[in-house]
Length: 389
Image (cartoon, rainbow, N blue to C red; front, side):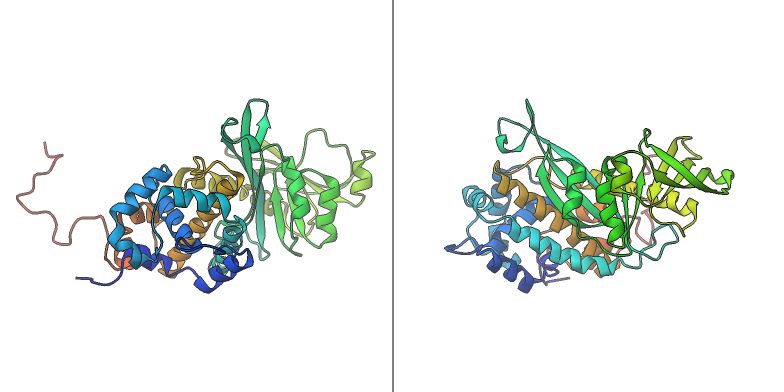
């Protein structure tokens, strides 16, 4: 019988505490704090994410029921919903944003050898944004439309491992393409984007920085064809052209040649036209690379389904951003746990198991690898089979 540490404590062992302390000191998070530290706040919010708590009262009730065990998981301060609410309201959200970046820096090397599904040696990123709707009466600082509030999560996703590298949280009315101005461009990397990011001035900056892009073209693109290359139409390709832009503004913003690839998806029969500044790769590889962009949509769907980022525990901008960044930290922590323990389970399965075993005294590897199949000896002969005729 295992008599060691609680599962929650074993999960939190993956946190680099020294780096967390540096993030707290950077923004003086524990200044004039007597009992409920930033670590206490992080652990309480991580508990809420891992166990799908609905509200501050829900968090308080559950943690108070587990009071004798809280010390062993690292929560030293008193648990009260007013205390947690004040911490979310007042402590700088950048503490948890910076710490999430530390975890991301640890997770990405673990997934560096993950298959991309495309023959590509360079790093590939998908860049996209998702909108989270809010109530304007409760979140007036996030005004989106006349009777609606919203925030946007602008995300740069590493397609190897689906690890979010950069996330910007902005008001809902912020246009996606403007966030490219804050992008730290990695020379040699591929940036895959939808047509909402068509801005040839900004795409020119990517080219000048030595990066490559694959973006879906708009229908009204004004261009002149300079050359064409043969394509195998059995694969879905329809054309592979070198073009130059002809519009008065676009030709000035992007004066050098572009590559235009037309492709029809064999499954959906939907037509796509891509623009890229990379010429050596086969045209089919460019089309397949754009198809990988769908993973960022799956990432948005996953975090909305499995993490608490659609209903918030606080109403201020600071509280909302704090909750989002701690949720991202939990997502990356699960990704690290999956690799660290060499688990075959999906992240969703890991979260489901952790949600009901966090305060069990069991070895975490055994908890996450326990088979739900029948015992080796099979069912007892006295056990009735529900599906017997």
